[in-house]
Image (tube, rainbow, N blue to C red):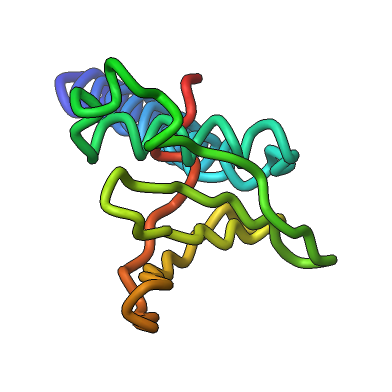
Length: 130
């Protein structure tokens, strides 16, 4: 009789633990695909880049003269939005936001020195409010 009771308890615990693990896997995969299911719009591209720029760069120098630093939309292609950040130094950072994935390539340009270089990548979803 003991073996039947222990077997029943073991089977019940096993089934409960499997069900919980399966639910956790489903929840974590839902969280991972939540961002990829969102469509990148022009507004989201602008918002994400603006949030990134405001968190990364010091905007205090533009307090009295906001025209020396800004974020604005650039050209749009079938695959990406371009968002441009202008620094008070005269440099521009062009953000190329992939419409499908949210991956964003940054290219820094300094027109007065004729310099253009890759400045890294971010994912726009990391800078959007949920």
